[in-house]
Amino acid sequence: MLAGEDQDLTRQAETFANDLTRTVRGVLGPDVPVFEAVYESGKRGARRLLIRSRTPEAEPSPPIPIKIDGKLRLELIVQLQCTWDGHRSFLAIGDSTARVRMVRKPEPLFRWEYLRHPESNVPCAHFHIHAHRDETVYLLLTGKRSNARVRKRTAQLDADTPVVPQLSDLHFPLGGPRFRPCLEDVLQFLVEEFGIDCEAGWKDAIDEGRRAWRRLQAGVVVRDCPAEAVRVLEDLGYKIERPAEPRPESSKIILY
Image (cartoon, rainbow, N blue to C red; front, side, top):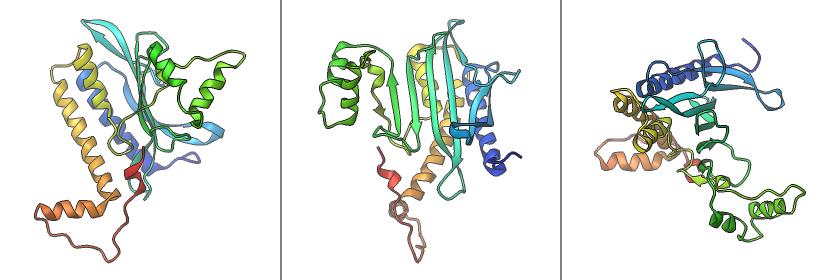
């Protein structure tokens, strides 16, 4: 085992990768690339554990092909960085991205992103739309100059190579770290809105994956605010034995 690799975390990540493969193949068919858990070197040489797709020839992160009426029209690119939760008990997602683009086009149509520790004042779970509208550009430049992001945009206009804001610069919030969308939501969005080709049992695959994800998130929310969980359970008639030192509420419950 190489330095920086954690066998227990890897096992949990491999299980999650297999679950993703089962869900995506249940929707898009058996020929789409599988997901794998693999370590690679990140910034400043630090090793990170990623879940990403791969081809049978081990090509990393190939786009997942999506057909409409039998023709390849869209591509889905998914990557998740894995880490331990705060108690080193369960797998947590550090950063993740899901991009949908037209086939063989570099710029995506949409991006769903999650940053466990965002470096600037952006929502940790957010959504980008890649499009253009004049009103959006106007509004992106007219905010208060006390806002760091507005100052950066106006300064970029005066640069030697001006940069004009776009709608894709907006970070639409998506419920913070606990209530963010899952990959199953992305897949059903493509089925319902674009009518992509999918397997006969696609909805069962979506439901199974979403149920597992939301149960997992429900458990995390309970750990974040145990007092509220106790209150609700007692309202439902459960008998709860409270610990001598109740666990305080986590700050993650209020994250943007």
